[in-house]
Length: 180
Image (cartoon, rainbow, N blue to C red; front, side, top):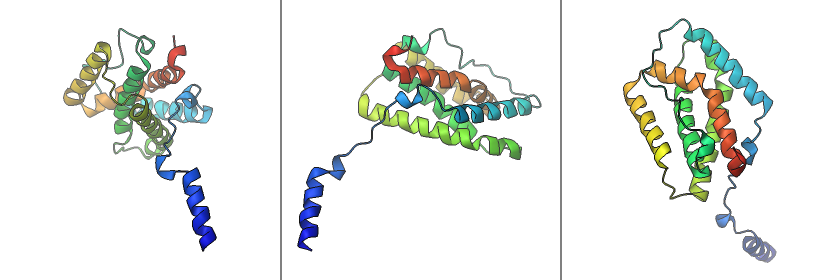
């Protein structure tokens, strides 16, 4: 018993468990795993087939910007991709009619949710008090307005059809200063 207390105390001092913090490295997103990309592509293709049968008109062009993510600071890029993923995961989490699409979206939804959580963790540890630049603030306002005024069908189509743009934005974010 004494040995356990001594060793426990020694380990506690050597490994202060309460002070360990998770490492939120973005570098793992510089090059996405092929099976994740394939799952996203499959889901997008299935969605395009479904979309042809529905009326999804949008008044806002959320993913058409006059600036590139490389023009933003790294913290702004993280905020951008986090907001894009917030919309995308919300839309992928909606109930869906075709069972094949419900199945196809599960893997991308899990992956994108994990990415979003990693970005949140990065912001909390690396730039907790960061305020968005004017460019990003304007886009975030546009996103909020679209969420309030556009139909769910429009938002869903925008999010899914521009998913590879979001993944490119993620890659630029992961490259940090090397993104040009």
